[in-house]
Image (tube, rainbow, N blue to C red):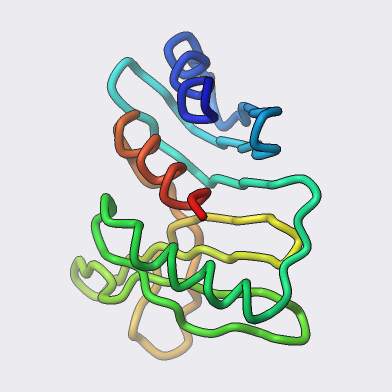
Length: 158
């Protein structure tokens, strides 16, 4: 079974009350995912964040940049496509964000993925504003189970 298969099986019966985290691991690929959700039903999830880890990973900056570029190309099932914003070479962290953030009124909404050289990927959604003096804050986002499976496959593909 793949990580997606294991997660689908767990999500079928997981009904968190309030924000909770479900950990799913695939020993065959060394990938694990922490899915933090506010609610889960038969069709989808109201997610707070995803944290993926691949044990035994130690990427150099060039490989990290290549992996981040691949993620930006593969992830196609979200409201906005992702683009590589920067690679912090000393910290070995690649930052991806929505290419064109969604907008509602004065607010902008965008996805953010941080890929670390140690094999950790953090995926979240934020709300910000173009108004001076305002700060962004993390917000929940909704994905169907199928869209979540595709996102995980796109993030973990090589």
